[in-house]
Length: 300
Image (cartoon, rainbow, N blue to C red; front, side, top):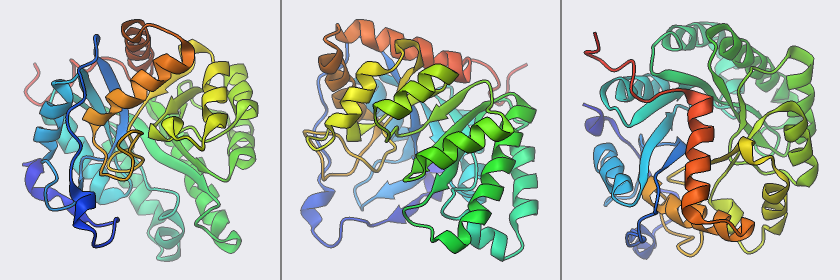
């Protein structure tokens, strides 16, 4: 079903060596959950199918995922995939970089209505990824991003699900928007990219911080400093695969099984036992998204 609907992408150019998938890392001593990935994207000709990617991840302790939509098509795909596999929950949204074009075409309202419909499904547990991105969107079109972001916030609150935020070069504006319109009870800064100042804001407001492979990069000590300041009850972990591959395999395609490297680096940063950290991250993730055991197709 889902394996035949992949979107093939190429984002490493023509160097075929970049398509070599890293070896399996040593398994974690306790399972963790990848709370943000894109299995609908296939990084290169040798990419595993979504089901194979889940099996590979489970073999090293990444037992469950949240599959995230970035437009209406991938949101529909994500919801269908989650309805059929007990290891998967879904998030649905229009990506902030796509929102201006959707709005300019006059399609924002009906696509938001379709997301509203998808959000009623029992295994759709988040609205995301949504937010603001001032890196790729010029100032003249940012009003459309804001309109879309506010509508997504309302969807999350209406359905009582989590909100997954994409925040790039827009920390102050994202925080101001959440405070102005009211953040959902469970708000997640996906691929946390802020410093200790943003970490303090998240602590003060009970907003979750999800760290990706970027937190392992040598040139990102500010992320590890923010991580150390974060309330441990608000910590999550993700891949954002097939993007943001962690060290020591940076530069290759990413997948949920490689999140092991990020978790181990997090434990090193905190000076914590890996199993203890993994159990804490799992408990936090379940607090955000609920149980993976309910809402499957065929449930009574």
